[in-house]
Amino acid sequence: MADRARTFAVASESRALGVGSGALIVLGTVAYLLAGRDPMALSGRGSAGDIAALGTAALGAAAVVLGCVQRRPTAATPGRGDGRTRAAIDIAALALAHACVFLLGWLALFSILQRAFVGAVLYPVAGSVLIGTAGAISAYAAYLSALTMDAYRLAALLAVFLVAGGLTSMLTTQNPQWWQENLSALGASSDISGWAFNVTLIVAGVVITTLAGYATRTLASVAGTQSARRRARRLEGGLVLIGLFLACVGLFPVDENFWIHTAFASGMVLVFAALAAGIRRLVPPIPVAFWSLGLLFLAVIAFAVVMFFPLGYYNLTAVELIAGSLVFAWLIVLIRNLAALDADPARDRP
Image 1 (tube, rainbow, N blue to C red):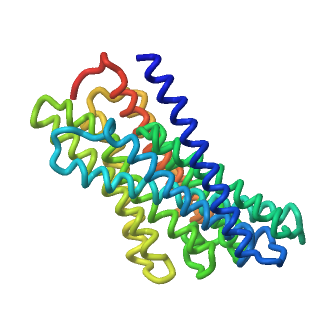
Image 2: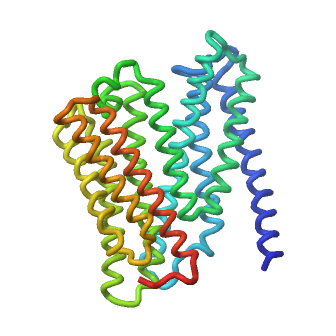
Image 3: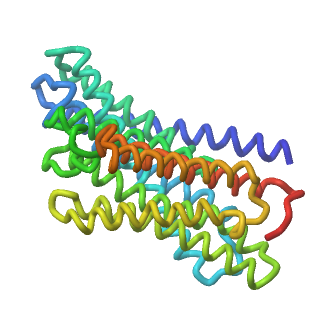
């Protein structure tokens, strides 16, 4: 068994290197053809950053699909009529999430580089090599990520994606005083900042719905009673609802649909509160420490709300950052706890 695992790991690395090398050649060539004879700026419209971001998004998504297809026979869930449909949805969500991570991440990185090297430009050959290298790194990482994807890695992917999206939106906004209004003001602009913010919320919502399937699949499969199966379905339904509400927050920007935007944002927090308070009933084997952590998060959010609305101690942006950070932190820790329960052979069955 150990020899087989070692052989698989070596073969996976070899294939990943091949995927990365192919991405370097493809994206480097495309970048050289697009650049022509003109030097490129690091960031901005038509820059090296734009080419790298769009190219790595496409190549990263393709690498994810390739990796998922190659691991699919071992990852499929037998005995389920909707197994292929669910697998296709999961693959699409993973590909989209990786594509957006690379798109937003490289945009943010090249924006930082442009600020570090003010006025610097890249000549065609140097720019093509740099962009091709970005494609190689992205495709290599995406292929291995998809090949070994599990609940732990998916939770980490969600965290990285949220940070990359938020940072990109903040770095590219044309309103440096956005924080004086509210967090959703980042999504109200028509420039790349608004696009990055809203797309981040939409894709994060899709990823959370995928996480719901990963997290509760084992709970449902090992449930020995009808009540246990109902509890697993309720947990999955709650997580899916959080994902849908989050996606709708991005679909309905605050400046165009204030009440709809606010309703979905508030609904997401309410669903989180219900899950955090009732997680021990839904998943009895979950550690008490995690349940206590959820109650602590709820108390902190309530305190932040009180400090803003009646007292006006700080602005709405601080409340939204606190609430959003704690909700997503709880979701990520929940996924890791459920994965730990799945990995623990001595756990009590639900």
